[in-house]
Image (tube, rainbow, N blue to C red; front, side):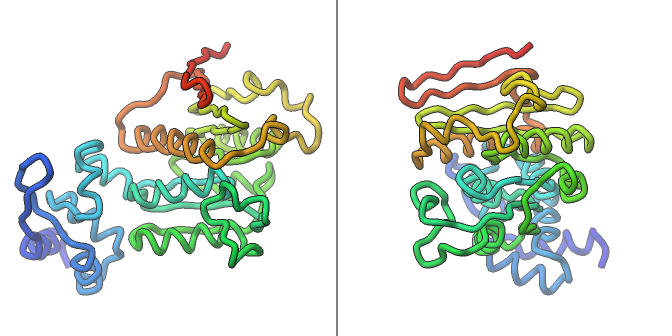
Length: 288
């Protein structure tokens, strides 16, 4: 079936509504996209992209459009994002990216949930404490947004596997808690020439940085990799991980990712955003 014919069918199926600003717009309900995708032989993701390009809003994204626009939503659906770590930061980031409509997610985590995860990790449930984090995150994506294609890798990311696991991604989120793994992830993203959105938490504090190809930053934040111990974890091992900290930092990471993917801009290069929840202050630190 030709693209023009698909557009004609979508136009005929579209409903007319009024958005919160009082403007008329054409839209498709979730049940419409499911039925039409089946009838047209398209994936849900392909159907939603075709609708947006025809000026028709899948209603599930209606509250996104005022922020990122129709073209921005298309870019999100066409994007592929990697998430390394599916625990505190990663669980919230997966949730937000799926609801934003990022079309393809690659989730990497070899860990399982334990009791100590229940205070802050979104997919840690009393009834499934032995579940694999990557599998739970992928399952949740399917429940949130059937248009999002998700791949779960039940392994820990390292220098040997990250370049291949993240191949084809447009952007990656660092949701790790191990400094050696962070450095391996930064190296992989530098090799693949894709942006990395770094995030970390400890107590009432959090930090976010956008690391661009050709401009690594982790050595400026944490010191040189060769000076780290084999299992170097951050200060959060002493200050703890309250539930609000990963929620806030993951949201900020997701916002940076969406800006980049939708072509809306990003934070300046070489800047670490430091967030102090206790004092209510944010500080931008220019790194050398």
